[in-house]
Image 1 (cartoon, rainbow, N blue to C red):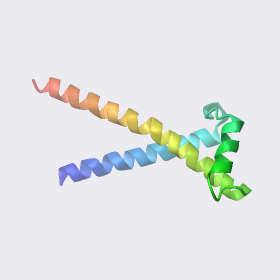
Image 2 (image 1 turned 180 degrees about the horizontal axis):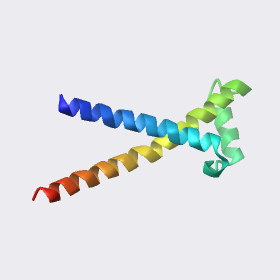
Image 3 (image 1 turned 90 degrees about the vertical axis):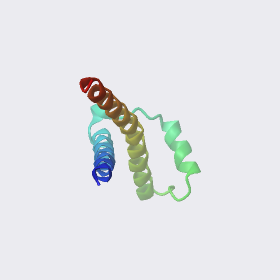
Image 4 (image 1 turned 45 degrees about the vertical axis):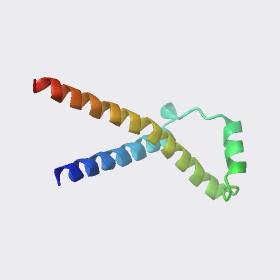
Amino acid sequence: MKRVAYRAAVIAWVLVASVSLARLCLTHESFALPIPEHAWAWLFTHVPGFWDGEAGDDLVIVVHWLMALAIVIPATSLALRMLRNLKRYATR
């Protein structure tokens, strides 16, 4: 049961942190991710269903969320590995 709660907490952390980072990137200019215009043009023309304006905004949100996930997941796994190593060395 303890292991299930631990995994649920890690999953909740990853989801909340990635959504928060994506929101930060979308709302604050200083945190904006530099995505070139030709990349957006290619993405809008190659992803079906995202040609109109409103769905295009949804695609921007999804892309920023996926990029935030790509940042949060490795950082979380590195932090957990460091904590496990510190715990192992502390118990010796």
